[in-house]
Structures are given as C-alpha cells and as structure tokens.
Image 1 (spheres, rainbow, N blue to C red):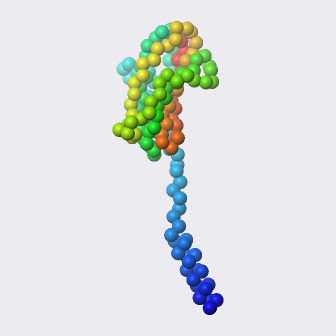
Image 2: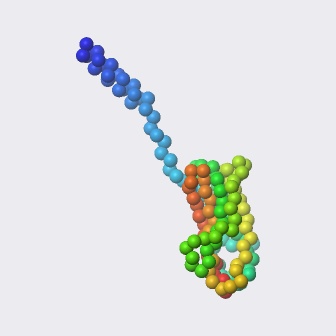
Image 3: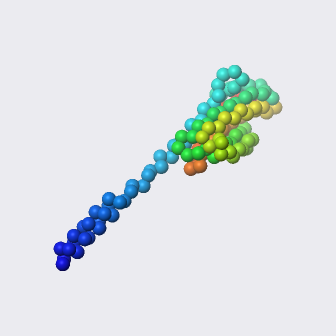
Length: 136
C-alpha cells in the first residue's frame, strides 16, 4: 500500500512538473526612436540666434509593446525640470509606427534650451532623445 501511495505521489509530481510553464520574461525593450535628418531638420546640438525657427522630426517604431504616447518638453538655462510643449496619445493606427515634425522657436534671450522628445510604450518603457540649443 505504501508503494502504491509513493508511486502515485511520484507520478503526480512528475505530472505537475511537466505541465508547469515557465513565465515569459519581459525584456523591457524601449521603442526605437530616431531623429529625422537632412534638409530643414536639426538632429543634434546647435547654436542659434534669438527667435530662430527650426524643425525637429522624429520617427518611432514599436519594438516589443505598442506605442502609447509622445511628449516634447523643454528646460531653460540648466533647469532640471521641464515644461511640456506638446503631448499626444497614439491612435490605434499609430501603435506600431509614428512620425511627427515639430517647429520650435528659440526664446528671445540668450541662454540654453534642452529639448526632450519622449516616446512611451504600453509597458511604460521610455525612449528619450535630447537636443541642446545654445541661444546667442
């Protein structure tokens, strides 16, 4: 009788172990984001005059999870906090790929501007790209 109980116990353990599925590990891969280049676009740090107008374009691609939102913010003269200039929630048709051009104008005073372009996916992964502008 003990042997039968032991046999059933071993069989039950084997059955449970074989049916256990390993939990899929989420690699937390953030979205792929690139600046548009060439022509009218700036894609890196620049020095510009006061009240200068320029274009920044981004292209974002889903890597793991659907794209969720896009934010553009700016910090002036070395400030650690930013001010939101543009905020957008993706439409269903934009979950896998998104492109946006933004016209920015420098302030009417000398100093520095740090522009931050952020894409967030549904899992909360963030990709940020930054352009620093020195205003003369």
